[in-house]
Length: 130
Image (cartoon, rainbow, N blue to C red):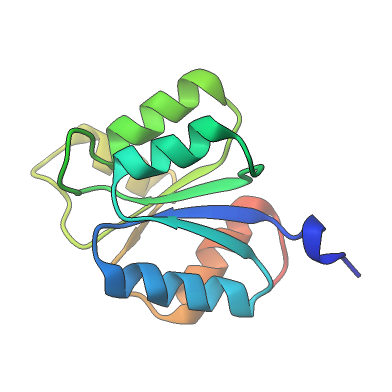
């Protein structure tokens, strides 16, 4: 059995407070440790401080501010190239080739989603069993 500090730490980023709380509750009930941010700038600040090890970034794509989820992911990749990054979205921006690529690689979960869909999505990425 894993000790509490061995459970994966997930940084969840979404500009909708309801979605952040929903995802946080679902993941915490599955024994994940969850940090949250309501925009990409806040998420980058959490990541940059490195006070907590982040095992997975789960980010919305379309968010207000100077960075969207794709830009946040690109910035994170420059410093942590092996960090798993998953995307959630309610609206795929236009015919963005990045969205098509994320969908093809099963790295994109469309909103709305059920708790089991979220857990299956995260657990497949982290290699855990539901």
